[in-house]
Amino acid sequence: MHRRHLLGSMIAAPLALSAPQLFAAANADTRVLVVFMRGGYDCASLLVPISSSFYYEARPNIAIPRPGSATGATANGSALALDADWGLHPALRDSLYPLWQSGQLALIPFAGTEDLTRSHFETQDSVELGQPIAGSRDFRSGFMNRLAAVLGDAKERAEPIAFTDQLPIVMRGDTQVPNMALKNLGKPGIDQRQSAIISAMYSNTNLAAPVTEGFGLRSEVMSAMSEEMDKASRNAISARGFELEARRTAKLMRERFNLGFVDIGGWDTHVGQGAATGYLANRLDELGRGLAGFADEMGTAWRDTVVVVVSEFGRTFRENGNRGTDHGHGSVYWVLGGQVRGGRVAGDQVAVSQANLFQNRDYPVINEYRAALAGLFGKLYGLNPTALDRVFPGARPRDLQLV
Image (cartoon, rainbow, N blue to C red; front, side):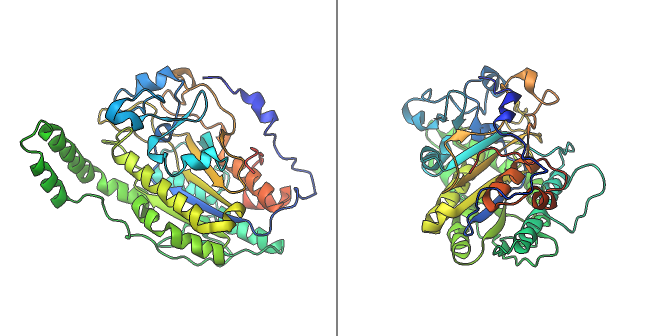
C-alpha cells in the first residue's frame, strides 16, 4: 500500500484555534444524522485493504477477495475497487457503491477514540461524551446536545431528535431532545423453523452437509453470542429494523428535525463472521440499503444532508479460531451526503502491515474522531474555534476536506 505519511496532515491542517472569524458561510438548511454501529464492527471487511498481502495472510477464511478475483457463481463476491489500495464490501454494490461513484461517500480509515479499554460500554460512552479521556467527565453532557446548544446560541435552527429507545448519552444535556424508539421492528431473515425446513430440502443432495453445517454454525453463534451482542447493542435497533424504518426517519428529518441520532446493534462478530457472504455481509447489506433508502427519501433535501456512521472501535485484524474477530481499536468512519466531497478515502493513512498494527493486533487510531468531527461541524455550520471547543473540549479540529 502507498503510505500516506503524516505530512498529509499539512493538507488537512488543524484549524487555527485563535482565529475569531467564522468559516465560509454555512448552509442554514444543513441536516446531520449520526449513525452509531454498536458492537464494534469489522471495518477491514467494509473497507478492504486490497493491496495488502498481510490482510490475506491474516484472514485465510474471512478475507474479502480482491476485485475481479472471484469467478463463476461467486463473481459478485469480490471487493468493489475504490482505488489501488482499497475496496468496498460487495454487499454494498447496489446501495452505497453508487454513492461512492457519484462522489457522495467518503471513508475515513484508522479513525476512532483514544480510549484503550476495548470495552463496548466504556468506549461507546467515550465516543458519545466527546470529552477528553483524561480527567473527570460529565456524563450529563453529550457532544450532539452541546452542538445543538451552540447552534441555538448562534441563532441557527436546532431541532435535534434521537431515534432510540432511551435518550442516549450523546444527546444528554441542557437542550431538550425528544426520542422515538425504532427497535424491535426487524426480525431475523430465517428463523429456526425455516432453517429446519431448508435443511430437509437438501437432505438427499450433495449440499446436505454444507447446508446442515451452515445452519448448525448459525445456531451455535446465536446461542453463544446473543447475550453479549444484546448487551453490546444497548437495545439499539437491528440493521434490518433500520432498513425498514430509514424512510420514515428521513421524512421526519426532511420536514422538521435537522440533527438526528440512531444506533444500530448486532456488530459484535466473535464467531462465524463470514466473508463476502454470511452474517456480517447481511448486516452491511441491510444497513447499506437503509442508508440508500434514507438518501432517496430525503429527496432534494439530500443535497443539504450529511450522514456520519461511526462505531466504538474496530476489531482484531487477524481472524480468531472461530472465524470471527474480537474487540479492537481503530475503525473506519463513513461520511455520506449530497454535499460531501466523496469518492475518496480521507484522512491520514499508513500501510496495512504487521509493523503498523496497534499492539500487534489492531488498526491504529491516527484520525482522532473528535478532531475530525469538529473540523466537519466547523465547515458545515460556520462555527468558530470557541464554539467548537464547547462541542469537543480540548480537541484540535482538523478539516479533512469532507465538505
